[in-house]
Amino acid sequence: MQIRLQNNPKAIFKDIILPDEKFDMIICNPPFFSSQTEALQQSVRKATGIKMRN
Image (cartoon, rainbow, N blue to C red; front, side, top):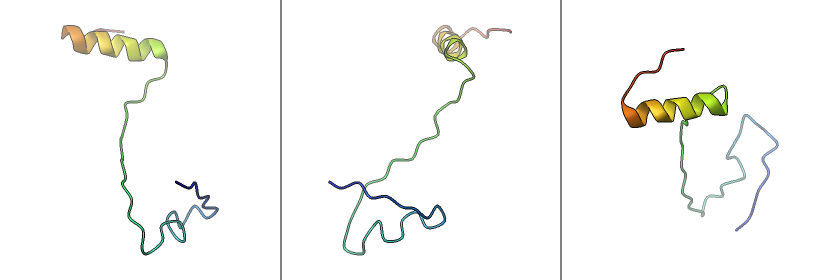
């Protein structure tokens, strides 16, 4: 395994992924919270099915 640095943000894969290489990619869009407390509140709300009000 190698770590390769791409200095050009407009060409993310150029000269990083070579023509004879294969790779796996995972893309995710995690939830974003303003604080750990907010994240925990959302977890409790989901687990209990009760809407919490601010």
